[in-house]
Length: 398
Image 1: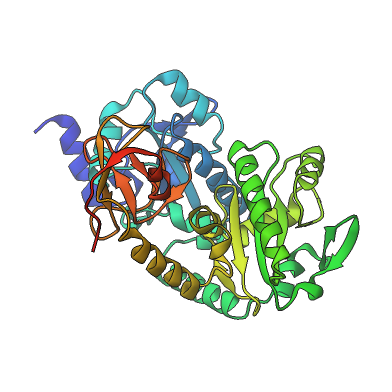
Image 2: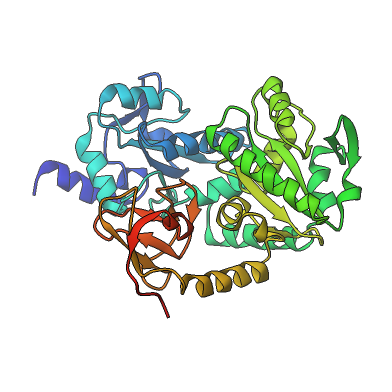
Protein backbone atom coordinates (compact mmCIF):
# COMPACT_ATOMS: atom_id res chain seq x y z
CA UNK A 1 0.00 0.00 0.00
CA UNK A 2 1.46 3.40 -1.01
CA UNK A 3 2.20 6.20 1.41
CA UNK A 4 -0.59 8.42 -0.02
CA UNK A 5 -3.18 5.66 0.32
CA UNK A 6 -2.19 5.02 3.96
CA UNK A 7 -2.65 8.72 4.75
CA UNK A 8 -6.07 8.72 3.09
CA UNK A 9 -7.19 5.64 5.04
CA UNK A 10 -6.04 7.20 8.32
CA UNK A 11 -7.80 10.51 7.51
CA UNK A 12 -11.03 8.74 6.60
CA UNK A 13 -11.01 6.84 9.89
CA UNK A 14 -10.46 10.07 11.85
CA UNK A 15 -13.37 11.84 10.13
CA UNK A 16 -13.65 15.58 9.52
CA UNK A 17 -12.59 17.54 6.46
CA UNK A 18 -9.35 15.54 6.21
CA UNK A 19 -11.40 12.42 5.54
CA UNK A 20 -12.66 14.00 2.32
CA UNK A 21 -9.78 16.26 1.29
CA UNK A 22 -6.53 14.56 2.36
CA UNK A 23 -4.20 17.28 1.11
CA UNK A 24 -2.03 20.08 2.44
CA UNK A 25 -4.18 23.03 1.31
CA UNK A 26 -6.69 24.43 -1.15
CA UNK A 27 -6.30 27.46 -3.37
CA UNK A 28 -8.24 30.75 -3.26
CA UNK A 29 -9.58 32.52 -6.39
CA UNK A 30 -6.62 34.93 -6.16
CA UNK A 31 -4.15 32.03 -6.08
CA UNK A 32 -3.30 32.03 -2.35
CA UNK A 33 -3.20 28.92 -0.20
CA UNK A 34 -6.21 28.14 2.00
CA UNK A 35 -5.50 25.85 4.93
CA UNK A 36 -7.87 22.95 5.47
CA UNK A 37 -8.11 23.94 9.12
CA UNK A 38 -10.27 26.90 8.01
CA UNK A 39 -12.97 24.41 6.95
CA UNK A 40 -13.07 22.44 10.19
CA UNK A 41 -16.47 22.27 11.84
CA UNK A 42 -18.27 23.60 8.76
CA UNK A 43 -20.81 22.09 6.39
CA UNK A 44 -19.02 21.77 3.05
CA UNK A 45 -20.39 21.81 -0.47
CA UNK A 46 -18.16 20.11 -3.03
CA UNK A 47 -18.97 21.91 -6.26
CA UNK A 48 -18.16 19.85 -9.37
CA UNK A 49 -18.37 22.14 -12.41
CA UNK A 50 -16.64 23.31 -15.57
CA UNK A 51 -16.24 26.64 -17.32
CA UNK A 52 -17.27 25.20 -20.70
CA UNK A 53 -20.71 23.91 -19.62
CA UNK A 54 -23.61 26.41 -19.85
CA UNK A 55 -25.55 24.83 -16.97
CA UNK A 56 -22.56 25.37 -14.69
CA UNK A 57 -22.27 28.99 -15.79
CA UNK A 58 -25.97 29.43 -15.06
CA UNK A 59 -25.85 27.74 -11.64
CA UNK A 60 -22.70 29.41 -10.29
CA UNK A 61 -24.38 32.84 -9.77
CA UNK A 62 -27.26 31.17 -7.89
CA UNK A 63 -24.83 29.33 -5.63
CA UNK A 64 -22.76 32.50 -5.17
CA UNK A 65 -25.81 34.50 -4.07
CA UNK A 66 -26.79 31.81 -1.54
CA UNK A 67 -23.18 31.56 -0.33
CA UNK A 68 -22.90 35.31 0.32
CA UNK A 69 -26.21 35.41 2.20
CA UNK A 70 -25.15 32.48 4.39
CA UNK A 71 -21.83 34.17 5.11
CA UNK A 72 -23.64 37.38 6.09
CA UNK A 73 -25.75 35.40 8.56
CA UNK A 74 -22.70 33.67 10.03
CA UNK A 75 -23.67 30.17 8.87
CA UNK A 76 -20.92 27.59 9.11
CA UNK A 77 -20.82 26.81 5.41
CA UNK A 78 -18.04 26.59 2.84
CA UNK A 79 -17.88 25.58 -0.81
CA UNK A 80 -14.93 23.85 -2.47
CA UNK A 81 -14.70 23.97 -6.27
CA UNK A 82 -13.67 20.69 -7.88
CA UNK A 83 -12.89 21.62 -11.45
CA UNK A 84 -13.82 19.51 -14.46
CA UNK A 85 -12.10 21.96 -16.82
CA UNK A 86 -9.64 20.63 -19.34
CA UNK A 87 -7.08 23.45 -19.14
CA UNK A 88 -5.56 25.59 -16.41
CA UNK A 89 -6.58 28.93 -18.04
CA UNK A 90 -10.22 27.76 -18.17
CA UNK A 91 -10.05 26.67 -14.54
CA UNK A 92 -8.51 29.95 -13.42
CA UNK A 93 -10.96 32.07 -15.40
CA UNK A 94 -13.94 30.22 -13.92
CA UNK A 95 -12.50 30.14 -10.39
CA UNK A 96 -11.92 33.89 -10.36
CA UNK A 97 -15.70 34.36 -10.67
CA UNK A 98 -16.22 32.36 -7.44
CA UNK A 99 -15.80 33.49 -3.82
CA UNK A 100 -14.71 30.10 -2.45
CA UNK A 101 -11.53 27.95 -2.57
CA UNK A 102 -10.80 25.12 -4.96
CA UNK A 103 -8.86 21.90 -5.19
CA UNK A 104 -5.64 22.91 -7.01
CA UNK A 105 -5.98 22.31 -10.75
CA UNK A 106 -2.81 20.21 -10.81
CA UNK A 107 -4.05 17.76 -8.18
CA UNK A 108 -5.51 15.38 -10.73
CA UNK A 109 -5.45 12.45 -8.33
CA UNK A 110 -7.59 14.17 -5.73
CA UNK A 111 -10.16 15.34 -8.29
CA UNK A 112 -10.39 11.85 -9.72
CA UNK A 113 -10.82 10.25 -6.29
CA UNK A 114 -13.53 12.73 -5.33
CA UNK A 115 -15.42 12.11 -8.58
CA UNK A 116 -15.23 8.36 -8.06
CA UNK A 117 -16.09 8.48 -4.36
CA UNK A 118 -19.24 10.56 -4.93
CA UNK A 119 -20.07 8.92 -8.28
CA UNK A 120 -20.13 12.19 -10.20
CA UNK A 121 -21.46 11.47 -13.68
CA UNK A 122 -22.96 14.85 -14.55
CA UNK A 123 -22.35 18.52 -13.77
CA UNK A 124 -23.12 20.84 -12.11
CA UNK A 125 -23.14 18.74 -8.95
CA UNK A 126 -23.11 19.99 -5.36
CA UNK A 127 -22.34 17.30 -2.79
CA UNK A 128 -23.09 18.60 0.71
CA UNK A 129 -21.10 17.12 3.58
CA UNK A 130 -21.51 17.32 7.35
CA UNK A 131 -18.51 18.50 9.44
CA UNK A 132 -17.63 14.84 10.05
CA UNK A 133 -17.45 14.16 6.31
CA UNK A 134 -20.74 12.26 6.05
CA UNK A 135 -22.99 13.04 3.07
CA UNK A 136 -26.00 15.24 3.88
CA UNK A 137 -27.15 15.70 0.26
CA UNK A 138 -25.65 13.79 -2.68
CA UNK A 139 -26.69 16.67 -4.99
CA UNK A 140 -28.09 20.00 -3.75
CA UNK A 141 -28.16 21.83 -7.10
CA UNK A 142 -31.93 21.57 -7.36
CA UNK A 143 -32.35 22.72 -3.75
CA UNK A 144 -30.22 25.83 -4.31
CA UNK A 145 -32.14 26.62 -7.49
CA UNK A 146 -35.49 26.31 -5.70
CA UNK A 147 -34.74 27.69 -2.25
CA UNK A 148 -31.39 29.50 -2.34
CA UNK A 149 -29.81 30.02 1.08
CA UNK A 150 -33.02 28.85 2.79
CA UNK A 151 -32.03 25.26 1.91
CA UNK A 152 -29.22 25.38 4.50
CA UNK A 153 -28.26 23.08 6.22
CA UNK A 154 -29.62 20.85 3.42
CA UNK A 155 -30.85 18.09 5.75
CA UNK A 156 -33.84 15.91 4.93
CA UNK A 157 -35.76 17.59 7.75
CA UNK A 158 -35.05 21.06 6.34
CA UNK A 159 -36.07 20.00 2.83
CA UNK A 160 -39.33 18.57 4.21
CA UNK A 161 -40.05 21.91 5.94
CA UNK A 162 -39.42 23.88 2.75
CA UNK A 163 -41.57 21.58 0.64
CA UNK A 164 -44.42 21.85 3.17
CA UNK A 165 -44.11 25.65 3.13
CA UNK A 166 -44.16 25.61 -0.65
CA UNK A 167 -47.31 23.48 -0.75
CA UNK A 168 -49.05 25.85 1.65
CA UNK A 169 -47.90 28.85 -0.38
CA UNK A 170 -49.29 27.53 -3.66
CA UNK A 171 -52.46 26.24 -2.01
CA UNK A 172 -53.31 29.76 -0.81
CA UNK A 173 -52.07 31.49 -3.97
CA UNK A 174 -54.18 34.19 -5.62
CA UNK A 175 -53.37 36.55 -8.46
CA UNK A 176 -53.39 39.49 -6.05
CA UNK A 177 -50.99 37.71 -3.69
CA UNK A 178 -48.62 36.96 -6.57
CA UNK A 179 -48.46 40.61 -7.55
CA UNK A 180 -48.25 41.91 -4.00
CA UNK A 181 -44.58 41.05 -4.50
CA UNK A 182 -44.09 44.24 -6.54
CA UNK A 183 -45.86 46.29 -3.89
CA UNK A 184 -47.92 48.16 -6.49
CA UNK A 185 -50.85 45.92 -7.38
CA UNK A 186 -51.02 47.06 -10.98
CA UNK A 187 -49.53 46.49 -14.41
CA UNK A 188 -49.13 48.73 -17.44
CA UNK A 189 -51.34 48.59 -20.51
CA UNK A 190 -51.89 51.11 -23.30
CA UNK A 191 -49.94 53.69 -21.29
CA UNK A 192 -52.23 53.39 -18.30
CA UNK A 193 -52.20 51.50 -15.04
CA UNK A 194 -54.39 48.41 -14.88
CA UNK A 195 -55.24 47.11 -11.37
CA UNK A 196 -54.53 43.44 -10.79
CA UNK A 197 -57.97 43.12 -9.20
CA UNK A 198 -59.49 43.65 -12.67
CA UNK A 199 -57.82 40.44 -13.90
CA UNK A 200 -59.18 38.20 -11.14
CA UNK A 201 -61.36 35.45 -12.62
CA UNK A 202 -59.41 35.30 -15.89
CA UNK A 203 -56.81 32.85 -17.14
CA UNK A 204 -53.57 34.83 -16.98
CA UNK A 205 -50.24 34.00 -18.62
CA UNK A 206 -47.11 35.35 -16.94
CA UNK A 207 -44.61 35.74 -19.76
CA UNK A 208 -40.97 35.82 -18.66
CA UNK A 209 -38.94 37.16 -21.58
CA UNK A 210 -36.31 39.69 -22.64
CA UNK A 211 -35.60 41.83 -25.70
CA UNK A 212 -32.11 40.56 -26.57
CA UNK A 213 -33.03 36.87 -26.51
CA UNK A 214 -33.39 35.13 -29.88
CA UNK A 215 -35.70 32.32 -28.63
CA UNK A 216 -37.84 34.99 -26.92
CA UNK A 217 -38.19 37.02 -30.11
CA UNK A 218 -39.32 33.96 -32.04
CA UNK A 219 -41.79 32.80 -29.41
CA UNK A 220 -43.19 36.29 -28.79
CA UNK A 221 -44.35 36.49 -32.43
CA UNK A 222 -46.16 33.15 -32.15
CA UNK A 223 -47.66 33.97 -28.76
CA UNK A 224 -48.89 37.36 -30.03
CA UNK A 225 -50.77 35.75 -32.91
CA UNK A 226 -52.40 33.25 -30.54
CA UNK A 227 -53.24 35.97 -28.02
CA UNK A 228 -54.95 38.11 -30.66
CA UNK A 229 -56.88 35.09 -31.94
CA UNK A 230 -58.10 34.17 -28.43
CA UNK A 231 -59.06 37.76 -27.65
CA UNK A 232 -61.00 37.81 -30.92
CA UNK A 233 -62.97 34.83 -29.64
CA UNK A 234 -63.78 36.79 -26.46
CA UNK A 235 -61.87 34.34 -24.27
CA UNK A 236 -61.13 35.51 -20.70
CA UNK A 237 -57.40 35.42 -21.31
CA UNK A 238 -54.70 37.93 -20.50
CA UNK A 239 -50.92 37.94 -20.62
CA UNK A 240 -48.57 39.97 -18.45
CA UNK A 241 -44.99 40.54 -19.57
CA UNK A 242 -42.54 39.87 -16.74
CA UNK A 243 -39.38 41.63 -17.97
CA UNK A 244 -36.06 39.87 -17.60
CA UNK A 245 -34.35 42.77 -19.43
CA UNK A 246 -31.24 44.19 -17.79
CA UNK A 247 -31.88 47.68 -19.16
CA UNK A 248 -35.01 49.78 -19.44
CA UNK A 249 -34.43 50.44 -23.16
CA UNK A 250 -34.76 46.69 -23.81
CA UNK A 251 -37.92 46.59 -21.69
CA UNK A 252 -39.51 49.44 -23.64
CA UNK A 253 -38.61 47.80 -26.94
CA UNK A 254 -40.11 44.50 -25.76
CA UNK A 255 -43.32 46.25 -24.71
CA UNK A 256 -43.63 47.84 -28.15
CA UNK A 257 -43.57 44.35 -29.72
CA UNK A 258 -46.23 42.91 -27.40
CA UNK A 259 -50.03 43.43 -27.50
CA UNK A 260 -50.55 42.58 -23.82
CA UNK A 261 -49.94 44.03 -20.36
CA UNK A 262 -46.55 44.45 -18.69
CA UNK A 263 -45.14 44.57 -15.19
CA UNK A 264 -43.66 48.04 -14.52
CA UNK A 265 -39.88 48.19 -14.92
CA UNK A 266 -37.98 48.61 -11.64
CA UNK A 267 -34.42 47.43 -12.39
CA UNK A 268 -35.52 43.81 -12.15
CA UNK A 269 -36.53 43.72 -8.47
CA UNK A 270 -40.15 42.65 -9.03
CA UNK A 271 -39.33 40.41 -11.99
CA UNK A 272 -36.58 38.70 -10.02
CA UNK A 273 -38.94 38.02 -7.12
CA UNK A 274 -41.52 36.48 -9.45
CA UNK A 275 -38.83 34.47 -11.27
CA UNK A 276 -37.70 33.01 -7.94
CA UNK A 277 -41.28 32.33 -6.90
CA UNK A 278 -41.98 30.33 -10.07
CA UNK A 279 -38.45 28.86 -10.28
CA UNK A 280 -37.75 30.37 -13.70
CA UNK A 281 -34.37 29.13 -14.95
CA UNK A 282 -34.55 29.87 -18.65
CA UNK A 283 -36.51 32.16 -20.92
CA UNK A 284 -38.88 32.46 -22.63
CA UNK A 285 -41.20 30.89 -20.07
CA UNK A 286 -44.98 31.10 -19.88
CA UNK A 287 -46.56 30.37 -16.50
CA UNK A 288 -50.36 30.06 -16.65
CA UNK A 289 -52.51 31.02 -13.67
CA UNK A 290 -56.16 29.92 -13.66
CA UNK A 291 -59.30 31.94 -12.83
CA UNK A 292 -59.00 30.83 -9.19
CA UNK A 293 -55.49 32.28 -8.93
CA UNK A 294 -53.79 28.86 -8.74
CA UNK A 295 -50.95 27.85 -11.05
CA UNK A 296 -52.28 25.75 -13.93
CA UNK A 297 -48.92 25.01 -15.57
CA UNK A 298 -45.36 26.25 -15.88
CA UNK A 299 -45.15 24.61 -19.31
CA UNK A 300 -47.20 27.18 -21.24
CA UNK A 301 -44.47 27.69 -23.82
CA UNK A 302 -44.33 24.01 -24.75
CA UNK A 303 -48.12 23.74 -24.81
CA UNK A 304 -48.39 26.74 -27.14
CA UNK A 305 -45.76 25.23 -29.43
CA UNK A 306 -47.59 21.91 -29.42
CA UNK A 307 -51.23 22.96 -29.66
CA UNK A 308 -51.29 26.68 -30.54
CA UNK A 309 -54.49 28.45 -29.37
CA UNK A 310 -56.19 25.10 -28.80
CA UNK A 311 -54.10 24.75 -25.64
CA UNK A 312 -56.33 27.34 -23.93
CA UNK A 313 -57.18 27.20 -21.01
CA UNK A 314 -54.09 24.99 -20.51
CA UNK A 315 -55.74 22.69 -17.98
CA UNK A 316 -54.93 18.99 -17.62
CA UNK A 317 -58.41 18.18 -18.91
CA UNK A 318 -57.87 20.25 -22.07
CA UNK A 319 -54.46 18.73 -22.74
CA UNK A 320 -55.85 15.20 -22.32
CA UNK A 321 -58.61 16.04 -24.80
CA UNK A 322 -56.06 17.35 -27.32
CA UNK A 323 -53.91 14.25 -26.89
CA UNK A 324 -56.94 12.02 -27.52
CA UNK A 325 -57.74 14.02 -30.65
CA UNK A 326 -54.13 13.68 -31.77
CA UNK A 327 -54.23 9.92 -31.21
CA UNK A 328 -57.35 9.66 -33.34
CA UNK A 329 -55.96 11.92 -36.09
CA UNK A 330 -52.73 9.89 -36.22
CA UNK A 331 -54.68 6.89 -37.48
CA UNK A 332 -55.08 8.67 -40.80
CA UNK A 333 -51.35 9.21 -41.33
CA UNK A 334 -49.16 6.79 -43.31
CA UNK A 335 -46.99 4.50 -41.16
CA UNK A 336 -43.86 5.62 -43.01
CA UNK A 337 -42.78 8.23 -45.50
CA UNK A 338 -39.85 9.93 -47.17
CA UNK A 339 -39.56 13.59 -46.27
CA UNK A 340 -37.81 16.21 -48.38
CA UNK A 341 -35.65 17.23 -45.43
CA UNK A 342 -34.09 13.80 -44.82
CA UNK A 343 -32.53 11.05 -46.93
CA UNK A 344 -33.86 8.04 -44.98
CA UNK A 345 -37.35 6.69 -44.60
CA UNK A 346 -39.18 7.97 -41.54
CA UNK A 347 -41.45 5.77 -39.39
CA UNK A 348 -44.37 6.96 -37.32
CA UNK A 349 -43.92 6.64 -33.54
CA UNK A 350 -45.93 7.57 -30.46
CA UNK A 351 -45.06 7.99 -26.80
CA UNK A 352 -45.80 4.26 -26.46
CA UNK A 353 -43.46 3.22 -29.26
CA UNK A 354 -40.33 5.32 -28.90
CA UNK A 355 -41.72 8.84 -29.18
CA UNK A 356 -41.15 11.47 -26.51
CA UNK A 357 -40.25 15.13 -26.07
CA UNK A 358 -38.29 16.36 -29.09
CA UNK A 359 -37.53 19.40 -31.21
CA UNK A 360 -38.91 19.11 -34.73
CA UNK A 361 -36.10 19.10 -37.31
CA UNK A 362 -38.41 20.80 -39.82
CA UNK A 363 -39.94 23.73 -37.90
CA UNK A 364 -37.60 23.66 -34.86
CA UNK A 365 -40.54 23.73 -32.44
CA UNK A 366 -41.43 21.49 -29.51
CA UNK A 367 -42.85 18.05 -30.20
CA UNK A 368 -44.25 15.38 -27.90
CA UNK A 369 -45.38 11.80 -28.48
CA UNK A 370 -46.44 11.39 -32.11
CA UNK A 371 -43.70 12.00 -34.67
CA UNK A 372 -42.07 10.76 -37.84
CA UNK A 373 -38.69 9.46 -36.76
CA UNK A 374 -35.54 8.12 -38.40
CA UNK A 375 -34.34 5.31 -36.16
CA UNK A 376 -30.84 5.43 -37.64
CA UNK A 377 -30.20 9.19 -37.35
CA UNK A 378 -32.58 10.51 -34.74
CA UNK A 379 -34.17 12.88 -37.28
CA UNK A 380 -37.67 13.63 -35.98
CA UNK A 381 -40.53 15.81 -37.20
CA UNK A 382 -44.13 16.62 -36.30
CA UNK A 383 -46.79 14.61 -38.09
CA UNK A 384 -48.10 17.88 -39.53
CA UNK A 385 -44.64 18.71 -40.86
CA UNK A 386 -44.56 15.32 -42.57
CA UNK A 387 -47.38 16.30 -44.90
CA UNK A 388 -44.80 17.76 -47.28
CA UNK A 389 -43.59 14.36 -48.41
CA UNK A 390 -42.19 12.80 -51.53
CA UNK A 391 -44.03 9.56 -50.94
CA UNK A 392 -45.40 7.42 -48.15
CA UNK A 393 -46.54 3.92 -47.50
CA UNK A 394 -50.15 3.07 -48.17
CA UNK A 395 -50.67 1.62 -44.71
CA UNK A 396 -52.18 3.57 -41.80
CA UNK A 397 -52.42 3.10 -38.06
CA UNK A 398 -55.21 1.35 -36.24
